[in-house]
Image 1 (tube, rainbow, N blue to C red):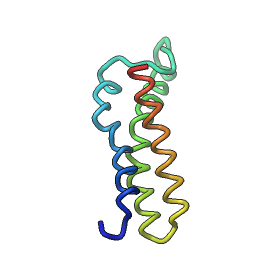
Image 2: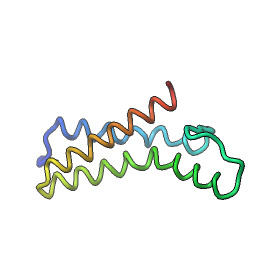
Image 3: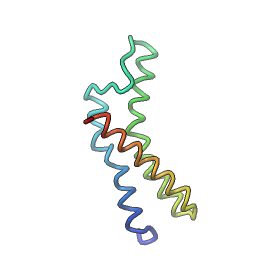
Image 4: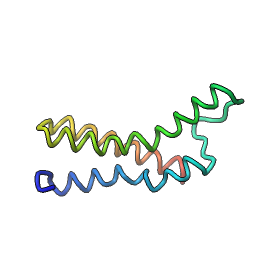
Length: 95
């Protein structure tokens, strides 16, 4: 962990907040994209809703990995995108 600046780790940790909110997305009945009648559109909307909390968590790992491999700008952009998704998750749940 010494190879990462503390500000980067703090920003990356914020990308893990959706893990704590995942219960609401999985079982809370959150429908940010509306409801489908059932069948294939309903399943597609369910998976799209789950991507709202999975993508920031993936951004945590991919962003830190890119930074560690020497692609600092790309890692920072991935972490910023994860942070934007985290803010949108919080807004969709509590806003």
